Image (cartoon, rainbow, N blue to C red; front, side):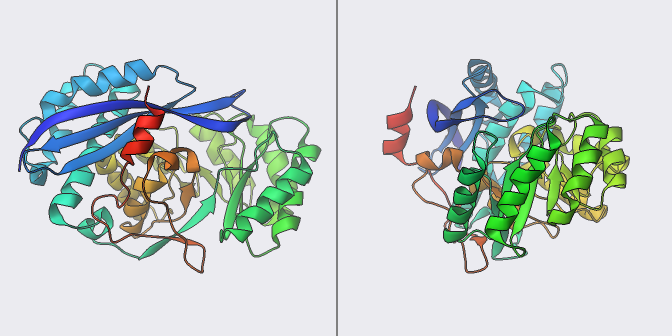
Length: 362
């Protein structure tokens, strides 16, 4: 089998109603570049990367197109050669930013193709550690919601079978922010996992103060309180709080995760499939976490991250964010314990719906 073509398609997925967060004034669209690796035997590998509010999506698309020569004529069984070559060719641009995002798009599709060629889900191709992965609802409980809305949304997640969920806080008015988190805890009870995300908007002192105020609420984790590159600040917050600190979604490649581990920056690391540069680097990051005895969660991309977390001994929580599900033909299913079930379908186990792709196409 040989790869004969790299095909791309841009789609714009509306987020309705728009989301207000501490880091983005408004998020109204998730705009994706879909990647299709076509072969001489009819199999097609699929992957995607995205941008918020269509920001610089053209640059991402152009970067992906420049990588086509790396995979043309490639046998998917020796797909590891993609990263080996990419590290050489991308050296000039560097190993962060758009070059790594472009690599992720191609690597995502390559792993899907490899699984389809073997007739196995990616989790089973690697060697799954578990048939289902704990997951949390992340597509709600935003800063734009009132306390009544927060409680209704939280109850809705429970009815859908989730056993964990995430809400957000901002850097000011800590008493009001803690009251919002407390309202969610009251709505879901003491046994449901509850995460809180500050979206990198606090100072170290602000984070420690609000973190201490929230400790009575038994949080699963406190996420990204300070700017992503301040690992010393993260380590200081981690040392000051009993609540576990989660971070890592904004660093690039397994080297970024290694730097956080060496700095003692977090209790839980959550690599982002896009910023890692694809599954090859994501798995390296996961195994580094295992070596440091640190749980590895995921950030976004649940339809692809599910298989990878299932194959990691230290795989932790899957972030269930529904931004991309409208272009997939299948949906993630939960078991009675609220875990995301790894499908038996080959590749990622989730495929693009051609009619949906056409509907949302640029």
